[in-house]
Image: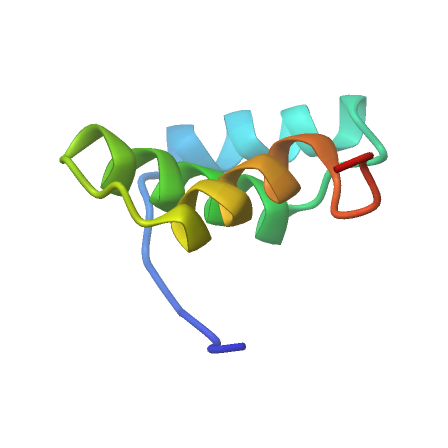
Length: 65
């Protein structure tokens, strides 16, 4: 696991905070991980590990395989 520190516009931060508050099973790390994995997939990354990370972030790592 790697820690990433980023600066984001205030508006994005407010929307992200609101989303996490409305969806208590989600957290900022899950949302950020899903966003980065989705970006990589949209840019042509076909690595199964990235796909799995995306699915785990969206559906939870305890989902049925």
